[in-house]
Every structure is written in C-alpha cells, then in structure tokens.
Length: 580
Image (cartoon, rainbow, N blue to C red; front, side):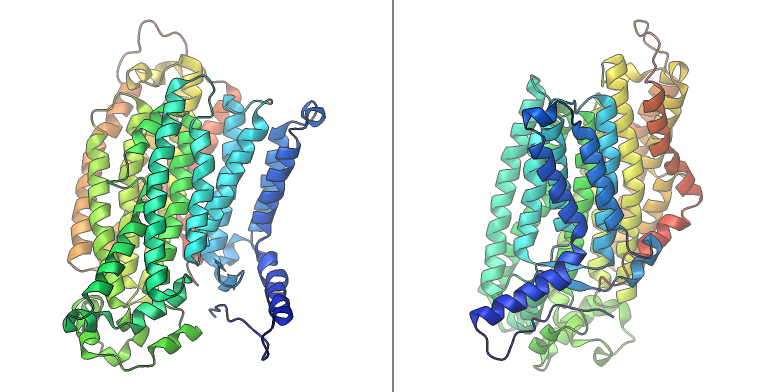
C-alpha cells in the first residue's frame, strides 16, 4: 500500500490546533523514521565539542566518528533486515518535505555504509590525523547528511537544501590538504562552478514553483497534469507557459548535472579530481554520484507520476482532451498500442508531455556525457584524471537508466521499477569498483609517491596482490564478464530494450559502442601493470598488511558478485517496490 501525506487539520483551524497537528506529525510520524540522520547530526555535534583542548588530548575523533556511523548504520537497517526492504511503506515526512520508502532506506544504508568504509580508508592512508580529524569527519558526515536528504527529497526546498548541504562540505574536503597549491586550486574551482550551478538551479526552482503555485513534487505533478499541456500547444495560446516550464526544467537540470558531473557541467571534475586526494575523489565519485542519481529519480518520478491513491488526483477530474490522448499515443502510449486510452490512468495520460520532455533531455545529456567521458580519458597520463573522465562516462550510463524509467513510467509501473532497480544494482557494483580503484591509488601514492600511470609499470611483479586487484577493478569498469560491472551494464541495457522506442534503442547503440571504446584506456593501465617492465629507479613496492586487507575486502566483491549477483539483484529489486 502506498501512503502519501494528508494533513489532518482540525475543523476549526487556529494557531494552537495547527501547532498541535504539526507537532503530532513531527513526533509520531517523522522523527521515528529520521533516526539515522539524527544520529549523524549528534555525531557531528560531538565531534565539534571534541575540539575543546582538554577533550582533544584524550579523545581520538576517529573512534568517535566510527562509533556514530555504526550506530546510524544500525538504525538504517529495517526491523526485518535488508531483505525486508519491500515491506517499507511510503510515508511523507515533515509535512511532505521528505519521503520515506524502500528507496530512501536503501540509499540511506548505502551512504552510511560507504561513510564507514571511507572513514577507515582515510585513517589508514593518514588523510585524517588526530589533530585535524574533528574537522575532517565533521565535514564528511555533514556531506553524508546532505546526501541522505537528497535521496529522500519530496519538495523543491529540500531538493535545493540537500544539494547545498552535500556540496559545501565537499568544497572544503577537496582542499583539505594544507599547503598544497593544487588542492587549494581544486577547491576554488569546485566552489566557483558549484555556486554558479546552484544559482541557476534556484532560479529554475523559483520559476516552477511560481508557475504551479507549489513546491511539493506530487502537487506540482498534479498541477502540470491539470494544465492539459498538449492542448496548450495545439491551441497556440500557451507558448509563454510552455516556454517558462521548459526553461525551469533546463535550469533545474543544471544543478543536477553539476552533481552528476554530466556534460556540459563537467569542467570541474578532472581538475578537482587531480588536485584533491585520491580518498576524496572516491567520496565524490561514489557517494556524491549515488545521491545525485537518487535525487534525479525522485524528480523524474515525482514530476512525471502520481501515487495512485493520493488526493492530488482530484486535480484531474476534468475530461482529458483529444490533444492529450493523441500526444500520449504518439509517445508513452506508442509502446502499448493494443491498450485503449481508457485502459490507462488519467494521470499517466495527462503527464505524458512532462515525461516526453524528461526522456528527450536525459537521453541527449546521457549520450553526450558517456561519449565525451570515454573519449577524453584516452590521452590522460595521470591516473586520477583518467578515473575522473571514467566517472563522467559512468554518469552517462546511469542516466540512461533514468531515461528508461521516465519512458516506462507512463505505460508500465513494473517496468519503471525494474529500470530503477537496474540503476541501483549498477550503483552497488560501482561502489566496489571505484572505491577499490581510488583506495589502491591512495595506498600506492603513499608508497611510490606518484600518481602517473607510467609509474605503475610492472606493478604486478613487485606487488602482485595490489596489481591483480587493480586489474580486476579495471576489467570490471569496462564491463567484461565475469566481473560485476558486466552484470550492471547488462541490467541497464535490458532496461533500455524494455523501454523501447527510438531514443532508447539509440542509447543502447551508443552505450554499446562506448563500452568498446573504454576497453582501450582501461586495458592500457592494465597493460602497464601486468606487462610493461618496472622503472629502473623504483624499488620494491609494499603497501602494508592492513592496506592489503582493505584492498582485498573492497575489490573481491567485484569478482564474487559478478559470478553470484543474486543477492545484490534481490536487494535492488526490493528497494524499488514502493517508489510508484
């Protein structure tokens, strides 16, 4: 059963009764489902209090941050375990600002678990020392909190708030290494691009909210459906309204594209990745991208569909015009020609123009992003810049799954859920691949003092375990079986085939060609590691026992889940059961 927020206000609305109703909603409904985020907030406060000199002397911030994340992780797991994700009902929290459903629980667990692994990595590489650990971990947890809000946003205000809460600490983390000019330059570039993207997105949000009279995503969807957009186009009287809607959609996409490092808002990514430490690159490429993908899905489904039992469908009580039916049959309904318009819900038909715009925009951006990222990675000699362009390319693959979701949302709720499940599985695979890659780069940086690909030559001879693990990760990033990256790409390709239509098949062809293109630059690094002779001036390479254990722990699942992917597939499937 899908539930949406319906304020239970008393018959005589006055200030005391309104406060009582809001307090009841907050204390009885919202806060019990917001406990992991509250634990993260409490941990941040404790870390800041630990800056008091007398406490700093004996309290190691690493253990405080680790304990806080573990407690949050415990509360992030549903009562019946992760296998019971599908039983989590959809609830709107804090008067509709956030939504709590199976996907919220999935991404919250994903982000907090990644923060746990990242804290251990930062400690092992020496990035977060005892003296400055309070600042580092506070920034990390603050960004994680913002990403959790992004994953559960149900209101334009929380959309913007989540992005800014995740972005501002990330700006500081990019330049966290003191005395390094490249890190300061990376942080400054990140801030400049982020500020510009945020301003443009905020203007787009104001346009959309001003035109529809609401900032609540389901309410906006109902208002858009009630406008009868195809009739406005056919009548020639709604050009101004349509132009403002398109402009608002494009401006909002700017902010999302910035977080996704999607073309043409990717310029910050290679420079920031090269200037920042490899550990921070791992955080930006995995956690930030996962939260941005969750937010993109929220916006696409929030504006393109309505929950079937929501009271907002009352806005669709008017008869659906012939223009709307014709528009639907030429787009969303083309995949189900056998079904009569009466067999499809009025909500699906009325929101067809919105979904058509999303499919077109996402398809173009995804295709360009994927192609540019793979082509630009060819000439890179620095491993972090190469992985930065790889991150851009993978953002294109993931956006293809969201485009398929928008296409399927009007004709098949089951198909749309499967498309989102393919995205979630890809993200689960991506966390092992990218965390493994950047962790190895960080450990090798501390050992050989270089991040150039040429200096990795012959690595498998002097550090066989590290060389094998790095090669496995690179092969998985390409998408070659039996690695988990192959299953992830295959799932997205399957979603594109299921969606059908010109744009989806075009994306399928582009994705297939890009997979072949990426084979060259990934295997170029693998060749240097496994075949090329080691540099004469480089001595023995040993990253240490604990770093080797960490590398195995994050890279071994790349192979294991590629052979037996059922557990991750079931988790992704359970996480999408109540998103529509």
